[in-house]
Image: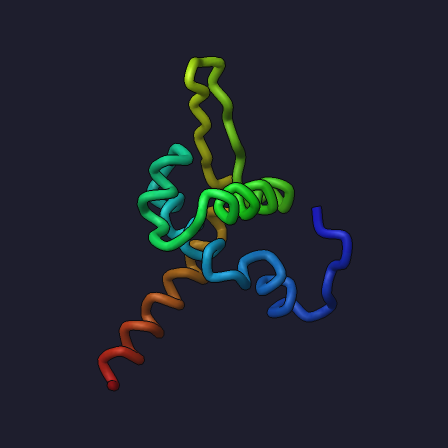
Length: 105
């Protein structure tokens, strides 16, 4: 979990999902469990190293869970936790705002 909990709730949210990659990972996991390779394809532009790092951080923050299957090659799946799913209204609001802004250009 987080070591330094900010006083401001907006700062807290940004501390958890303030990176563009984390928001896109959450966006893709809102539709359900995904394998690492699926996330690599759907989050265009992200490197394997950055995706791995962000997934580990998000797991440590309690936003998602990782399940490893004892297969060769290993299969790893990621699923949002209840806390992760609770971010859906935040992403929905970002979607509405983004559409409104784009239509005003």
